[in-house]
Length: 138
Image (cartoon, rainbow, N blue to C red; front, top):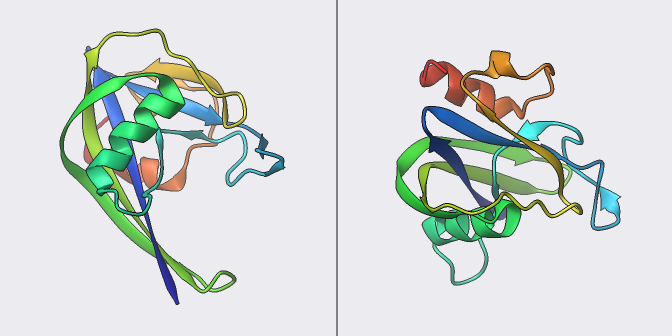
């Protein structure tokens, strides 16, 4: 069995949170949760700490330099088809250097700043975000 660690950052600014929409195809292959709203994040690389991965992914996916405060969510799931346990850590993040949002079109197609999940017109939201937003009363 393999264990894979994933790190995300829930970015907040002025009481709003940044969501990004997943593309249908990611680097030539079907994307996981296509068209779903998500937050910046991805796999922790070899010799990288999860906190560093969340910072790197925020820079790669939305061009934002962050300060990360604390872990606000953890979940793990076993994928029998891949014989892999996926563990996700979500950090709370704040922008420390304001920049334009730049998306990698190979991964994401849109972004939005929201005060609550009711601000988006889609029910396609990454499942773990529903729990985070419920716990934060967003």
